[in-house]
Amino acid sequence: MEHLLTKWEPLLKKMLFTLGIHPNEHDECLQAARLRLWKSIEEGKELTATFVKIRAKGGMLDHLAKRNRTLEREVASDSPPERQYLQETSFGSLMDELNKGLSKKEYDYLITLMQGKEEESGYSPSRQRSFKSELRKKVIALLS
Image (tube, rainbow, N blue to C red; front, side, top):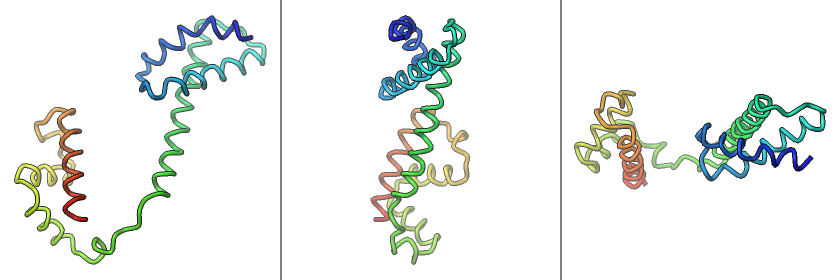
């Protein structure tokens, strides 16, 4: 059975790039696809190009979905308890503190994010990601 799987290895690797899977996930996704194909061989299915593409893609995407669900549960359960500082402070005073600690540009972008209008900010998606990351670090530092 191993030689049947080896025959489809180039197609599986191509699918990783077609699906846009991050390189850190390649080994696990390849293994999930191989396992899915292995089960199909055990069931007596004939491996055609179309069948392999469908089964392998399903295996890879199922693996990623399962991993994401697991990560969401882990992140939710590992969240630190709310700091007492944040529970006893009003929203207005937090915003005043942020207004004092952030530059005008940063504070305006924070307000834009809070209003859900980041597309209207005029920044490219990559700049928005970078700016959000920088802003998040600064806000955490200010409120800690």
